[in-house]
Image 1 (cartoon, helix red, strand yellow):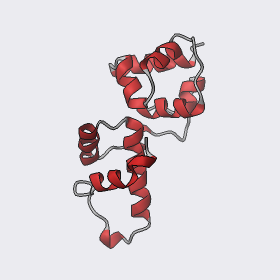
Image 2 (cartoon, helix red, strand yellow):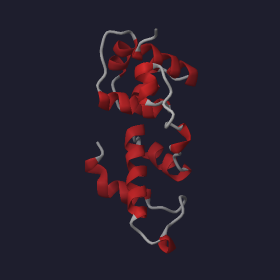
Image 3 (cartoon, helix red, strand yellow):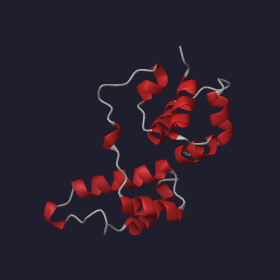
Image 4 (cartoon, one colour):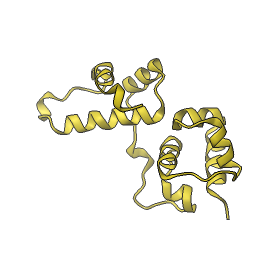
Length: 135
């Protein structure tokens, strides 16, 4: 039976990522990730959620090695404009997802007649207004 750390490492290697890459995308330290993969540390729910999102895996899979029937990796698609903005600003994967979720919440409260397209949405304006909340 594989451990949480081994499943994280296996998925990271499948993606061709270094520990540094995954750590950056998940907003954790490389040392923590190394210890986790080597079974020297345990992981809390918040960090596991960030790692799962970065890896495109469910928490169920990382914890138990089982794929949840309700998890679909295609549910999270980062628009190109947001991806470019995040790269320019050096945002973590978690911060990028948070911006995307905030945008979706804003748009859910607007009339469909005033929805903007993914390409012309003001990511910078949104980020500047919420920057202190998504550290």
